Length: 65
Image (cartoon, rainbow, N blue to C red; front, side, top):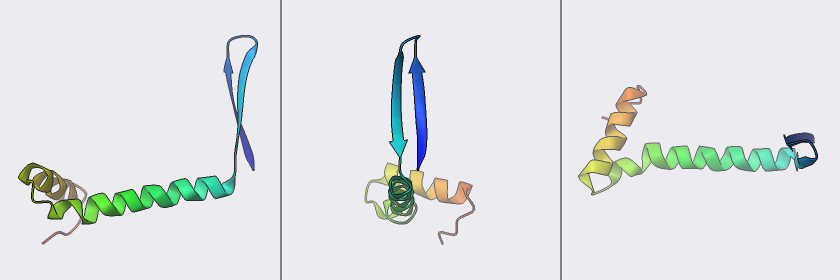
């Protein structure tokens, strides 16, 4: 377990403990969001959204067709 501390001024301190389970959950959710954006947003029927996802895939050298 790691501890992060933020000091605001001379006497105020906010401490937060971040567990490894919490970090893994954040990583998993970020990965799922990335897969959703890369894989499924391109099938949108809204042309602007589809084209933006298509252009992003090309800019990241991700094969799309």
